[in-house]
Length: 238
Image (cartoon, rainbow, N blue to C red):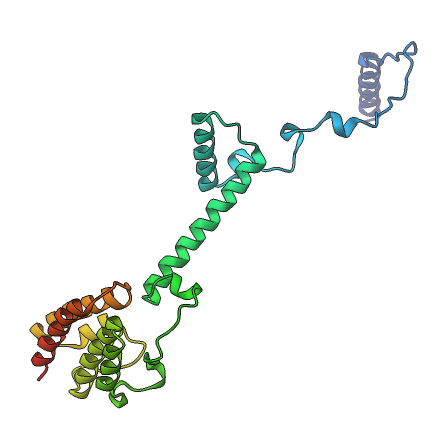
């Protein structure tokens, strides 16, 4: 037992001695002289430009739309021989984003309000004869009197509006539709079950929307033709 312990200690001592002999000393350079480096005051001026601006995110970090816009602007600059600075490219990119936002708002307005976009921002004078349907039920309004007043003022667009409202009023009185001021003409068309009446109503509503919401000018002769279309529709209502 003692012999085994002695053998183990002998092996450990031998391995420790070999490890010390295999170690490589690190040379020390005592001849070199260390000097302090001074940073010049013009350092910030020396390293200027986009290549030294590490806060600007370019390349793959930009979204696909931004890269496409910059590619188009760079292509236009190369075509016309213009050197567009990066700051100008960024401004033009923001302008394009703003125009796209306005286009999206315009489409939403046309979809949900069914009016022209400029009607929201322009202070166009509203006819004193026009009515707010949200404040009155259509069956309580004397549309004939309003239409005659519009014709006296030669406001034929407004007269066409009252012609169409007369159709809605008659359909509501006959319980063919259930009138409500925030319903669309498409909603009313779906409520009409009789096929021919529904078809004529669609034609009349298309004509009305182009004249009223489309702000198409109409003269006395044009009003006479439009009025005959509404008269034909009224005859189909039982």
